[in-house]
Image 1 (tube, one colour):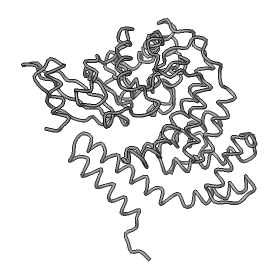
Image 2 (cartoon, rainbow over the protein chains, first blue to last red):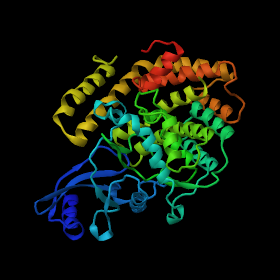
Image 3 (spheres, helix red, strand yellow):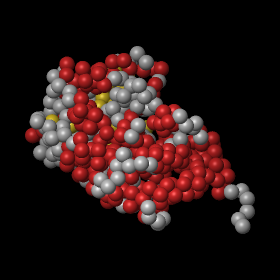
Image 4 (cartoon, one colour):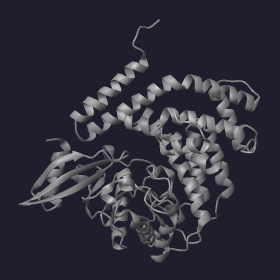
Amino acid sequence: MSDLGEALERLARRRLVGDGVEGLARLSAGATQEIWRFVLRDGEARTPLILRRAPGGTRVSETAVGLETEARLIEAAARAGVPVPPVRHVLEPDDDLGHGFIMGFVEGETLGGRIARGDALAAARPGLARQCGEILARIHTLDPDEFPTLRRSTPARLVSQYEEAYRASSWPRPVFELAFRWLAGHCPPPAARPRLVHGDFRNGNLIVGPGGVRAVLDWELAHVGDPMEDLGWICVNSWRFGVAEKPVGGFGTREDLWAGYEAAGGAPVDRDRALFWEVFGSLRWGVMCAGMAAAFRGPDPTVERAVIARRASETEVDLMRLLAA
Amino acid sequence: MQDQPTPGEILAAVARFLREVVAPETAGHTSFNARVAAGALEMARRQLDLAPAAEAAEQSRLAALLGVGGDLAQLNAELSRRLAAGELDLATPGLAEHLWETTLAKLAVDQPAYWGYRAALAERGSAPD
């Protein structure tokens, strides 16, 4: 058995109330972190679990919150009524598994295309956008003061953060320049009441079953800022999976999203802010993709990285349609 | 002169091998990555086929738009500088058209199946491929 498998065996007995583990397999999802699935044995009982850890056991990037914080965010979200996988254990140094945590396995669909178009979820789709709005309203009730290490952002600071990342790539992109000018000219003031923002709430980071959203994943980009950012990001073209007329994740309308948000106690939705964040979202994803070229030439020379780097141009066509149609 | 088959033909054959043999005969992460790798080779093949003509056209549009010479990287850097400085914008004659042509040419190589690209082609009345 591998080192990882042996470390998990020890962990199962010491921390998880089990006899051992079986069926350890790496899942292909998650380009920036390792995600493993395994089954915990306890007598006759078998419990599927997920190990989420950073490659080499360290923090993945400057913008990521760190896996220990991510685990604490998930626990706080659960208390606020947000559907999330239950956190079973946060790794400690003597677990010999690096940084990360173990959570329950939630059955359901995560592939964005199947959530937007698959027959199996046809009955769930009409309710998803409203449900996403309700979930976001609950996420935005989390207390930012409980997470003092999270980055504090304003719209202007986020734009300049991504502009710096783009300039650091030293690769000219006239369409991005156009978008940065537009954002500078349409940048709203800081949120009157900054909230804890998930930061990557979109189709692709949700587990969906026939009854709707079962879990919200990937909390690594959480920060404190304008709550409208989350409502814009889920409408970005890149997460519609070909269903143009359903801007919310390819499954719903902005009106349903906003109605759910407001009905669940979220602040009244500011339409102009939501549009700003949608344009920002396309550019942000573009800058993130473009940055993969440096990661590919540096620490992570995988084919997957190379291919994601070449998705930056998708956001260029999206930005052209938004700004120059 | 190098012999046949061409690099494009070789890339296409390796992509087929990955997609039709390796991916179905492996599992999990390896199978997934075999399909990703096939897609990467197909992208490289499209670039070999399409980029020379597209980049030549891009270079002459840029030279006309900017009134200066230079290679493609220099011209794009100059266009970027002028856009960032506000010296050029979408009201500049020829600019929007140039950005559209350049963007669509990039997508034809990178992601010809991307729905936003297909939608842009339809909106602009161009035939795909």
